[in-house]
Amino acid sequence: MSVGIDIGSKTIKIVELSHEGGKFRLKASGVVGHQGKTPEMVKDDKEFAVLSDAVKKLHKEAKISSKEVGIALPETQVYTRTIKFPQLTDAEIASAVRWEAEQYIPIPVNEAIVQHQIIDRREDTSPPSVSVLLVAAPKALVEKYARVVEMAGLSLASVETDLIALVRSLAPSDQTVLLVDFGGRSTDIAVAKNAQLIFSRSIPTAGEAFTRAVAQTLGVEESQAEEYKRTYGLSATELEGKVKGALEPVFRVVADEMKKAIQFYQADEKGDIPRSAVLSGGTAGMPEAASTLTKLLGIEVVVGNPFARVDVDPSAVKQLAGFAPLYGIAVGLAMGEA
Image (cartoon, helix red, strand yellow):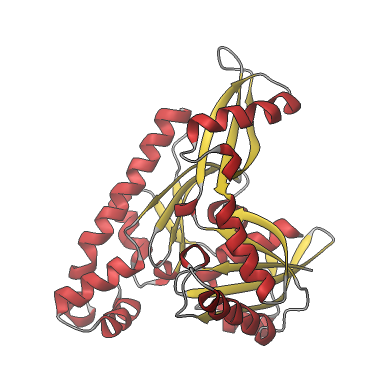
């Protein structure tokens, strides 16, 4: 059994998968809203206790059997870069990465946990090169997440980033796609090629910004605006299109950032253009979100289903229907553990 826990700014998600005969099977899952702070924002023992209690309760109520869990670090708190090396061996790259990291991360290397993945070896470039994904996270951040897990009575089996987990659950193995994960406070954008993370960036325009736009335009409380956003989204016919009118300018900002991500990726990697985009996170399920982005970007945009490669009991399919976009990171973490 393998378990992934995704601690977001508004919700905590948990997924347990089994892995038999090359197939994943969903054993248990759960999601709960929380009012606490996320681990990077926690300052004292009381706040740690609030968050760890929420994790502990969810683990119990979702009937998760394993106590070993994988967690994901938020993109806004980590440093991810693709760097190029000449044709070195794996061992040479492993020793060179640490020196290279000093140039790319804004904190001292001895205060960071640095990991790397070899993405691509190219003989057709001049000179031949190796693309390596460099990921660095502050040790203090990892310690906070570890403490929340341990205080919940669980043990930490693995630590990844949100987007590495998301790529695993949503990216196809044979093409280049854009992945967009809408959180409460930030939207994470990735380019994945052949199910490998190649490029990532994070922007502060996200779920809370959409809600504020509706609240200000319609002159309603944020709780009411949240309800309108979820129910009517970008539909032109609902509420005389007023909610759509409030949301559209903010959506254009996200679409522009998605276009920039494609341009940066092409300039940097000279890779093939992503032909489609996959949405994840709370806002992904908003009415007309995918169709609006399809029009703004000129490429196919779909809402990702992280359970597409997982056997799910028919009785659980209905329960998951509205929540599937929330589970991308938790499913990806559990797949990585298996």
